[in-house]
Image (cartoon, rainbow, N blue to C red):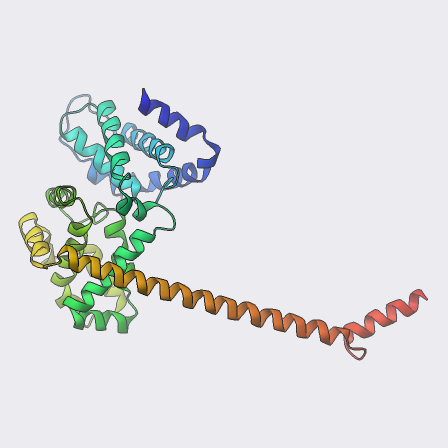
Length: 313
């Protein structure tokens, strides 16, 4: 009953109109049979009378509406659609009916978003996510300086290349086997911090370093999106989890990287604000100069006004 009330609140609350529009735009893409991520996440063993894709899409929509009502400061963030789909599929895989799985997926995600560190990954302006991506960049500079230098030279920013990994909690990494994804989530939930997620992202980058070195920016994005053979071997559950823990990113190391990334982000935003102010001042000066020019008797605009006034006299 409580879940149904939240769904209705999500449908009716005028303040959540933007979230509803974004959900309506994202879900059809996620559930597209040819290129969407959701069908693969829901590829469970076929059973007689099992819910179809349309029913599950409707269930995910209700989950997202209820989440928006439960956490209005978050509303809806891109990536939550596939995260909710994965949670629904796990609950179904455990033997729950679709109705039970739907309510369970909502309760789980609502509880996860109670944690400040993760909620800031989905809550505008996504400060936590941006800092986490920046921390990953800091760690790559420390653990793989040659790779960091090459990517910087190519204009390939690590924080953008790996954004979708963290934004979808790795659900959006299509070539990742389901078993590996489940194990990553288990490690993350048992640890209770994003450390496991950052370690996993760093391990993937370190394993892809060979193909990435010397690659142009287009190829860089392709490699990290597809993990084609022989890189796909590193996505297997035993290999990736071992690699992630071998990175030695301790809690103190991660805190330091997060602090450094937060400071870099603050400096970047201050510089952007200064540039914006400088541009605004320049525009205002140009406008003032134009007005002064028009006010001069010999100026074209000034002559036109004088002639008009004289004609009235």
